Length: 372
Image (cartoon, rainbow, N blue to C red):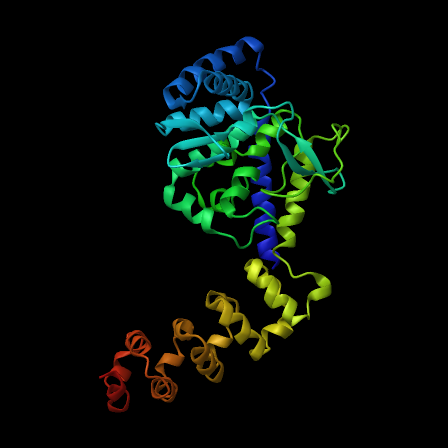
């Protein structure tokens, strides 16, 4: 567990450094230099976007793109899309979403006197509500577009991932789009760029606004205040909150360490927390079987069980694919192999299990009769 916490700390530090570099303009950035950058990126934006709608919609969206380019994350986002040779159509619809190179922006997001609301936190991590400029919603959908056009397979998988994510984020893609924190990028990728942590919160921080902390929530009855953090940067409050939340979903709560039913339900939502399971419960065969019935991939957290003949026989009877995790040394033991083959008629299991056996056992007459 200490190793996993250390890895998380490293990821957080890399993330914070990238975010701070992404959010804030360099001290050497003059208004003249900034204007020149905006001019260059504006031309790139014209090559990317087609706005489909009436004159009012087109005018509003052009203004939103200009607002987006006024902050550093916006220029990084447009540059990243341009480098992907993106071609994006923006249309008017009844909701805000991105799909198949089309950004759909609702009339509610671009009109009205009240900017779209979102859930945030106070300096003490208490839930509050805040408001953001409507163009930040456009930025959110364009970040989805960047993820899709960077790696469509990964983008689709992230949309389908609903475990090990923060509360009310809906799926991993929304979490990354809002927070910019993606361990797969921070630890597994080669050279990491500022554009790898582009997210809605980067735009909010660039505007001095508090962070968004979920994808959907009811916040109409929550306190709203324009001055959340006094002299503390919103990004610093968010970094502390995020680290706390990521640690929370990786650990079984201390007061529930021995509550088996709670733990099983907790693992359904946060399977990564299995690394914090007590040694005592790891030795509880019946409890381990219940965990594996729900997620056989958790077997790697129980290496000693893979070597236990009686346990492996029971595991296979409960979950067919448990055979994949049998310790290689057990596959050399004829009596153990015979017990498995003599207690199943599943042709799939027999075929794939037998492929793992050493040649000497495959040729053994007693075993061979089960394989033919």
